[in-house]
Structures are given as structure tokens and as C-alpha cells.
Image (tube, rainbow, N blue to C red):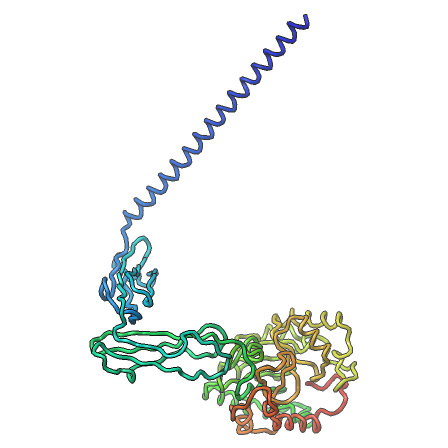
Amino acid sequence: MNTMSTQKTFEQQKKTAMRQEKTKIRKKKDKRLYTLIVFVLIALIGISAAVLIRSLGQPSITIIGSDDLSIGLYGTYNEKGAKAVFKEKDITSEIKIKSDLDTSKPGTYKITYVCRSAEKTRTVKVGEKMDPVLKLKGPLNVKIGLGEVYSEAGYEAFDEKGNDITEDVKVTETGFMKTGKHEREYTVSDGRGNSTTRKRVFTVTKNTGYETTGLPIMMFHHVYDPDDPPYDLQARYQNYISKDLLEEMLGYLNENDYYFPTWKEVRDYTEGKIMLPEKSVVMTFDDGELDSLRYIAPALEKYRIPATVFIITKNSGKKKVELYGSEYVSFQSHSHNMHRAGGMIGKGGVFTALPEKDALEDLKTSVDICKSEDAFAYPYGDYTENCRNILQKAGFICAVTTEGGRVFPGRDALLLPRTRVIGGQDLYQFIGSVSPGEPVMAGSWEAYYPDEIKQNEVYEQNAGNERNDGTSGQ
């Protein structure tokens, strides 16, 4: 009985195993069939797309100049491009160029012009000899520091007959105004229309020790209309300039092609990463009171001059940003609620006495309202090393003080001096403040412009030497 039962159970298990195996085989066949169907569908879609493209037609590409060129080693290749037309419409702007051309190595190269589904190729053969010959003296790869002057090592050129044509060599470069790779290009042509181009590659490294005229950061406060003077004009006269004088100043900058660097560029300048044009200036306005903004903003937009307005964001900060924010009016932090008394340093600003946590919270609030953390102006100009480090932790790129002088490479970007514009000054004094002047070595005592420091000290003595009660602006 037990034997028969065991045999029956075995047969049932065997049948079950066979059914499971058949199921597996069927599933594999189904999977292969499904995969085949997918591939067939993809192929059909691809064929249909190709047929559709052919039915729509291809653009017509015409290479400008010869399809087959021969030049000497280092020969000058001037890309003339190609034209593309589709259904009588010019689509040249859609052409993309692919090229493996290397004129420093003999060989045959292809320049392919691709437009949609069409392409056309130009062949360029580079010979084994230069024609004309152009030799560069000295190293072809040069390493120099930013602001350093490269003394040309020299070059010479000869035509096919051996005639000296060195005086015909033209030298061009983009300028070494920033760190990185740069090229100086030398080109000479002979009487037969052949041309040779050689290049010297320069690696420009960071450097803060070079002669420069420095960067003035101008510090304004309040602007008023002489026909409607503010009640406190006499008491705070040195903090005010008229809207008419402001327009004269902006007009001068505009007419004389001044450059207005961003705060990122100011930072890079101090770190020796970039040079700035001699006629560069940064315009800043402290406090940004609404009564002043109604004159400042239209003037900046009229002359298309970007400036920074440092605002105390608890004083209608959101309203100011909404009303006057533009590509010419950048609002930056003058703190949210740290423009008040409470410290024991300088004029007694509270920033120098606040715990780091409280200061960071204040800064975050002001940044959220200004929608930028590019720059910060120390309230009353008061700061300590700890204040500076808090700004660094908060992520500010630059910070300005009320100390006088120009900015030079090597200066701490979070402790930048400024040149104050004082009430009673005229246009010619402003011009003197922003004019480049004689270059001096960055880091030398001359770089601190004693005259501008003295000017700020005179202001402090006449208008700002009292301990602050939290109401006067800086």
C-alpha cells in the first residue's frame, strides 16, 4: 500500500515538473517573439522616418571657395564657410562645422559642414614645408604672472626665394587680462598669396605684485532735489549731493567709456586673477533711503550705469527692491537690523558686539530680501576680524568699509576701502577721484592713496566723529 502510494506521488511530482518545464519553455518563446516584434517595430519606425526625411528633401549645401585646398606647414587657413538653402530659404545659420585640421602636422584633413541631414566636405592638404618660412625665437610655451610684461624673443621670415620678409610679420593677441591660456599669433604673407601663421602659447598665473592705478569704489549717501531740499540738509550736508550733480557725474563716466566691474570681478582683481581696464570704477550708495532712490534709480537707468545700493532691509527693504530693482540698481546688504548702536568699537555699531549666530541670522534675512549676497557694507564702517570672518561664513563675495583709498591687488576682498563723495564737491573733484592717475606697485604704501585717506579722515572729524545713537547713516 505504501509502495503504491509513494509511486503515485512520484508520478504526480514528475507530471508537475514537466508542466512547469513546458511553461518555462513557452515563456522563453513568448519573450523571444516579443523582442523580435519590438525590433521589427523599431526598424519600421526608422525606415518610415528615413522615407519621410527623403520625401521632405535635404538642404542644399554650397562650400564657399575651393573644395580642395593645399597649404604649407603652419599655413594660414581662413575659414570661408558654406551656405545652406532649403526650399529656397537660407538656413546657413544652422550649419555646424566639424574639423580635424592641424596645420602643425603634414597630412590630409577634412572640414565637414553639416546641416540637418545633409553634409559636405572640404579637403585641406598640409605640406611638409613652410611657405613662406616663419621661425619663432625662444620658447613656444611661456609662463608669466598676471600683469608681467613679456619681452618678445623675436622671429624671422623668408619667402620662397630666401628674401627676408620679417618686417611684414603681423603680431596679434587678445591681451593677457586674466589667468589661463592665451595665444600670441604671428602671421606673414608673401607676394604669391601664401601665408604662414605661428603661435606662442602663454600660461598666465595669479599675481598681485604688478603696477596698476587701482580701482576706486565711490561711496555716496543721499541725493536730493535743490528745489525741494530735505529738512536735515544743513545738519547732514556732507552726506548729500544734488540730483543735478549726480547726473553730471554719471554723464562724465558714460561719455568717457568707463568700465563698471561686477563684485565677482572686484574679488578676482584683488586675488590677482584678472586685470581691469584703467578707467574702471564701482559706484555705491549707502542706506538707500526712498527719498534718495527716486532720484538715484532714474539717473542710473538714464545713463545705463550699474551701481550698488546698500540698504538696511528692515527699513522698507522689500518695497525698495520691488520698486527700484533693475539691471542698473543692484540692492546689497547693509544688514537687516545691525545699523544701530550697541557696540564699543568705532562709532558703536552693534555688529561688533553681536554673537555669531545672531549676526548670521540678520545677514541671512537681509540677503533673502536683497536677493543677492555679492557685497556687504559694514554699518557705520565698524568691523572686527570676527565680523569679517562672519561675512566669509555667510558667503559674501566682497565687503566695503568707510576707510579711504583705492582697491589694489592683494587687498582683502572683505575689507575694501572706498572713496567718499562729500557734499560741496564739484564735478572736477569727482573727475580727479575716478581718473586713473600714475600706476604704482600693488602692495606699496603709495597704493593706499594718502590724499583719499586724508579726505575721509577730514569727513570723519567734521561730520561723523560722534558715537552713533543709531540714527545717523553710514
